[in-house]
Length: 155
Image (cartoon, rainbow, N blue to C red):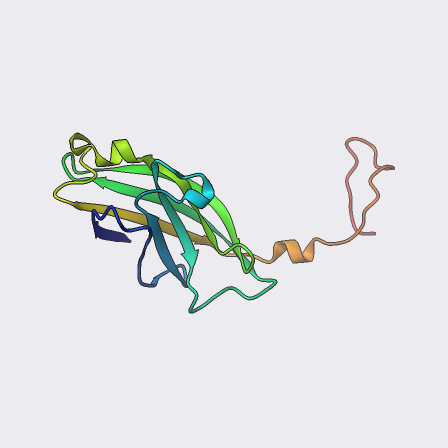
């Protein structure tokens, strides 16, 4: 998902409309002049958030591989922050990079990110479905008496 935004030095935050990926609704949040509350001063800050219209329920969670990018309009390439697996839950429904790209780098016309007051940011989201395996591997086991090389079986 890519978003185009005009350069506006007075804009504190830009938030996309909801978009769908992996069966969930998301929003891309951009702080063009940095998210100062998370030490993002002097940088463009970028976040992915679970949509408020379909929040995760308490006790449920999901993992997703997230890749943020900004488009170099001169070279027709992307600056990409490689995919990072992160966990989203009701208590932590937003994740991102407060120091995504330095403002000086972003605003330098030669870098191609901001051309004619236009830039293109985006995010790729790959949701990793919970297999539920962890729910079936519960219990207390005493391995202190097991010798090296021995096999374990349900007896």
